[in-house]
Image 1 (cartoon, rainbow, N blue to C red):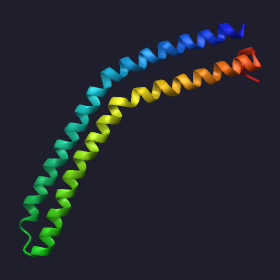
Image 2: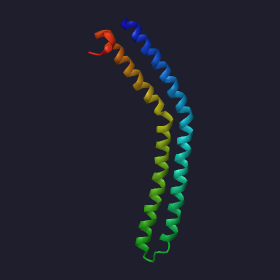
Image 3: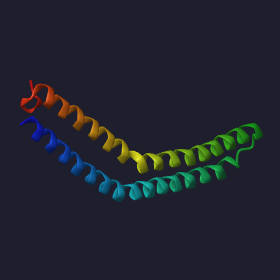
Image 4: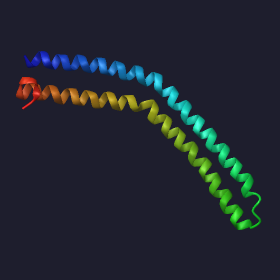
Length: 118
């Protein structure tokens, strides 16, 4: 009886994995596009701020603010690349976790029997 439950869980895992891969292939490009749009909007805001910074008379304050603005632009690019990697490869983590849960649940079925609930 518990063997059929184990097989049913693994078949369910295969269906879940297929669904996760399909969703990932649909939403990864959308997530990348949203990240790119956010970067473009943030870049525009920082560039407008640079125009205002250039109007500051104190050279030390102006250079400090320009350096800070440039660091923000540079870090935004790194954050976008990291976010895109997360979007791109998160489906692998979901499949691994679902597989681990299915494996542990089937082990519980084998060890204790009766649906895995004590």
